[in-house]
Amino acid sequence: MTQELETYFNNYFAMFRSEGWKQLISDLQSNVGQINSVEMTTDNDNLNFRKGQLAILATILNLETQIDNAHAEAESEDTEEALDEAV
Image (cartoon, rainbow, N blue to C red; front, side, top):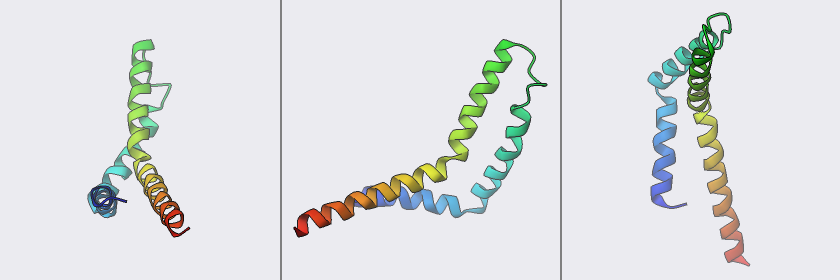
């Protein structure tokens, strides 16, 4: 893994550990229920707007998992490269 990529992951991991991140995720999780309510939908345009909001929220709420997976994959590639070089 390059130093640049390692810094990239470390910056995300530091952010995920911050109280601000935890607060943001908590607030967004609370908002999902309200946005996902069919009862509050007024028309088709509003439904599409809500779908867009939910897609963005899902991206943010799943960001930590996505970064963890990408980090694990990068480490796995490093391990494979090291094994190939050892052979």
